[in-house]
Length: 569
Image (cartoon, rainbow, N blue to C red):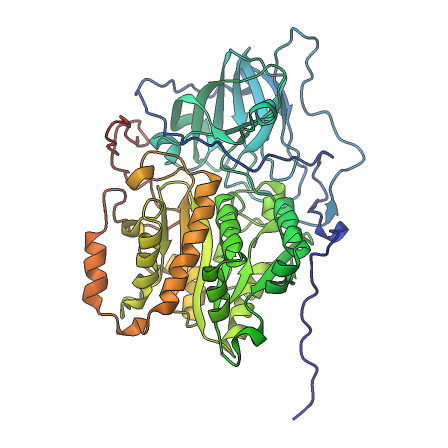
C-alpha cells in the first residue's frame, strides 16, 4: 500500500466578518450600479386572490421603436462565450435611460443593472404606456422569462400599462390568474408592506413579434396605478432572492454559536465567474448519539436562477433543521444533511432565467464529464458518490419552481420494468403535512430519455431510490383553504418546514419496503385530482395542463386558461 494524504476539506467560506470573497462576481462586460438593493423581508400580510379574467382584456400589438421612444436600453456587449469576471461597480457607466427634463415630465426612469436584475429595453408608446423587452440568458438567445427591474419618477392615481412582449413560453399561469409582483419603497417605509401582487386587465397571449430564429413571442400586458408620487417601485416575476441574500443569511448562521456548531459551512466548488458554491453539513455532534451510522440526505436548490421561490423553500428548510426544537434535534440525530442552497450563483447574479454562464441549462449536465464547464453539477454528483462509500443515501431532492402549474408537488423515478412503492411514500407524507400547499395528484414518476441529464434521474441511476424534484408553483394553490390565492414567501418557507416534518415521519417508518402496494394505491386514488391532470410531458417543459376551472364558494373565482389562438381550452 502506498501512503497518501487524504483530500483536504474545503475551507470555511463564511467568516464572522464577510469579506471580498463573498461578494458577487460578474462577467467583465456587464455594468453594475453601486447601490445594494434591499427589500424588507415580509411580504403582504393579507391573502391575495388570483386575478379574475373578464375576457375583455386588451391584447395590444407590438409596435416597437417605429412608433415609440426608447427610454431605456441596456444590453451587455458580451461575446459568444464567457471569458472573465470581475467584482461589480465599474468606474464608468453609460447613460442608458432617459432623464426627465423638468417636474412636468412624467416619463418613467427604468433601471435593471443590479444583482439579479433583468430588463433590456423600455419603449414609451404614450405618456403612460410602455413596451418592455427582457434580456435573454447571457451567452444564449433563449429563455427570456425572468424579470426584475425598478422605475422611478412615478405619479399616483394614474393608470399605467406595461406590456412585456418577448416571453417565449406559449403557456403561463399569467393566463390563469397569476399577477406580477410589485415593491414600493415608500409603501415599505410608511406601511411596512413588502412585495405584493398587482395588476388588472391582465392578459398573456401570442403576439405579432417573431424573433431571429423564427420563434413566436408572447406578451404579458397589465395595467396598474402607483401608490405614491416620486416613488421607486420594483417589479419582479417571483420574490427575488439574490446571491448576496444567501451570503448574508449564511453569515448570520455563522455568527450564532449554537447554529455554527450544528452547521458546518464548506466550499463545494467555485463557478466559472469565481462565485462560491456553499456546501452545508447539518447534523448532531457524534458525542450526542454514540456510534450510530447515520443515513444521508442531500438537498440542492436554485439550479435555475429564475426559480427564486426554491431559495425561499430552502430557507424554510434550513430554519427548521437548525431550530432549537425537539423535531429538529431528532432529525439531526438520525440524519446527516448535505445541502447546496444555490447551485447556479452565476446565473442568479446576472439575472438569467435558466442557464449558467456557459449558456447551457445546468440541470441537463449531470451526465457530462466536463468539470471545468459545469463544476457545480460535477461536484454535486461527486459528493453523492463519495458519501455512498460510507453511508446509505436516504433521499436526494432538487428544489425547483414551476411557472405552469399550481401547488407544490414532487417528481420521482420509476422504471418501466419495476415500480417501487417506496418512491410514493414520501410524497404521500408531504400531502399529509402540507395538504393546502401540496398536491399528490400532480406528482408523477416517469423516467424520460430526454431527462437523463437531470439531477433527479442521474442520482437515481447511481442507486438512490428516493431521488426527487420538488416543484413549487410561481402562482399559488388550487386546493383546500388556500385555493385561489397566491403563495407568499411564508408559504414557500412553510413548504420547507413540511418537507422536514415529512422526512422525520419517513424515518420513523419501521420498514418502508414492506409497505403493501394496495395501501399506497388506495391513498393515491383518494387524493384530490381536481387541481391537476395527467401529462406525458416533462416537469420543466410541459404545457399548462389545461388547468380546470377552480370553483370557490363565496369567492367567485373564474377565468379559463386560453390556448395560443385565444380560445378557451
